[in-house]
Length: 368
Image (cartoon, helix red, strand yellow):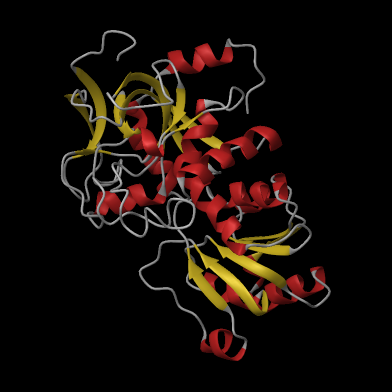
């Protein structure tokens, strides 16, 4: 079922050669929808750290491939077995495409545990993503947008939001307990601060950039610490804030060399550190792991149902994404330059279809 005439070709920003810039070129609009597929007209595509890994060739990507695994848009066609979606629905994408539905990860807690190893791929990573005018996604991993959640907010939530939301959930902390976020002012971190506050937690935000510290404060962190004062002083500041107890759990989102050491050190004995940042090696001081019994677990993207719950929290608590917006796929080089320069405040996005954004603004709703 389709909502209107869909063109045969579209513009897409694609990886055509590893370690080379994206190339904006014409590509075929996906027309072969599987039974549970949705075809969306992309409104917003967001940039993530993983996009740089795709460019480097470290994600097993077959070329050419349209980048971005964080997208939002409007459904224009649905597969024959799709239920719960129709043309015209505003949606947030899911990164997973065609999970097998049978493995332990697909059938883990709730109905999803980690990435399915037998899936049909990952949008923008191993299959085409959202730096394109149209994208094919799996309805089983998509989520309808609440009326007051904008495309601009939803696209970064598709991975960044889902990832840090699950990280906060993995701490299993109760209202009133202390949590620390190392890398609190980055694309994921500034969302994590807001999610933690929405769950009633007391938040220590630790960052090492002026831009990041500003976003940490804006997000409502109870304590904001500049990591540039040094490891030992950071720990002392956390002790002061928590009456000497340190935090019950920490979520590490930073790629800095000593970030994991700091994450462990600010966490109380027998506490938990959730590692989110993607590093080739995660270095944990043995004193933290053995003498202080710091527990460490990794975390990836959340389940479809958790993603839908996250959007409800975004709506209810007016969670905001600090975005750096670029108009049009031809601005991809400028977006990449900003990200690589280390001056990004929050998330970088491409407005792929300004008409959808205009229509949204004309709705009269107070969007977040």
